[in-house]
Structures are given as structure tokens and as C-alpha cells.
Length: 261
Picture 1 (cartoon, one colour):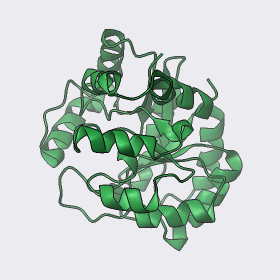
Picture 2 (picture 1 turned 60 degrees about the horizontal axis):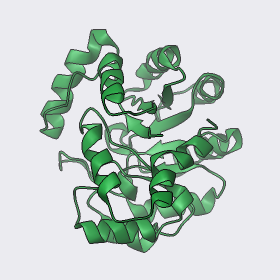
Picture 3 (picture 1 turned 30 degrees about the vertical axis):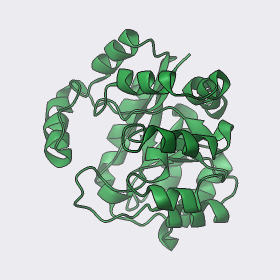
Picture 4 (picture 1 turned 180 degrees about the vertical axis):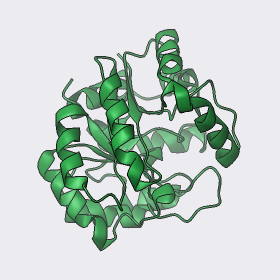
């Protein structure tokens, strides 16, 4: 079984604009249109059972409409990590809706212009912790290389120490291109690390060592599709010299437990 914990999709009517923006900002060519139908096509092609679609609100007034769409596409095969924004006033009511209709929350500190350990967002974490909702953060540098790093491993470790029951997923293995800080602050800690934008940015032996240095039940397979073709990361993990048991935990067992599947 394969569960991709980190994908993106947009409604058909805005997908072309989203694609143009993503390719311009990140200077990449997307695998395909960032739509649900494209995601499902690639899931079928690559034998992926379940994908989690992550929403990001770059403006506070986008939160309700993004989540309404995410709620509508949620299914047995599609799980949804919903949007919040630091300036969204009705965040407590939105969290109740997410608890009833979603599977988790995705925050993007670079696009949303907040530091993850700032006092202003700590009440969010407290409430999300109480609701037992998984909370995913973009972590580390952006592909564009033009933004501040507001979600560095040293800041992340402050969050998990203050909220030890919070189910944190640190995307991009805890900090894209901040690998030494990931080793220093996050490896071995009680925090989920997803593999999106991790497998192809370090020597294979170093990737293997980092995987083996983290609790095996806190590793999640993620790709950031459609920026990355899921098959590329599946093939990498399948061919990596680690145990089949560890591969199973990464590919699906940990996500099944986290999402109560």
C-alpha cells in the first residue's frame, strides 16, 4: 500500500492560473495540470492508494472557499489537509469545520508571512492539539530561493517542545536544504518528517543514515505532486537499501495510523 501524504490540487476553474504561478515562482515544469483528475490519473498509474491534498491560503479571505472545495473532494482515496491563515479572524470556527470534514491542516509560513514559533499563532497550536488534528508545515527553504526561512528546524523544535501532543508533520524532511540543522534539532524527536523534496538532494548514504536515525513510526512518504512525479520518489524508496519493514512504515503504515485509516 502507498499513501502520499503531501500533494496539491486546485479546482479546474483556477488550475491553469495556479500552474502558471507555480511554474513562475518555483522555476519548474509541473508534471501535469494541478487538478484532482490529474492527481487521480497519476495515482492509478503509480499504484498509489491514497493521497492527501494540501491547501494553502495566501490571503485570509481565501480560507473558507479553499476548505469548502477540499471538503467536497474528500473521499476514500483523497484525504485533505485544510487551509488556515494567521490573519483569519474566525479560525476557531474553521477548526471545528476541519475537525468534522477534513483530515488535517497545512500551513505555509513563507507565503503566509509568519514565523512558526511566534506568540500570535501559539493559541492555534493549543486548539489543534486539543482537536488531535495533524498539522503540516512547509519547512526549510523555498525552491525559489527568494524568501526568508520562517520554519527552520531550530524554530520547529521550540513548537514541539511547547506542544508535545501536537501531531506535527515537518514537510521536506524537516527543512529543505537545512539538512545539518535537521540532524541537530529534529532527528530522533517525536515529530513526523515527510520525504517530499528529500530523496534527490543528498547522497544516498546520507539519506539512508537520516532515515535510520529517526523513529520508524514518524516517517511519511510525500512527494509534493505535481511538482514531482510520484513514480520518481516511489522508485527511489523501493530501491533504497533499507529493510522492507521500514519501507512499509514509510509508504503507508505510519500514515494509516496518523489518519486513522
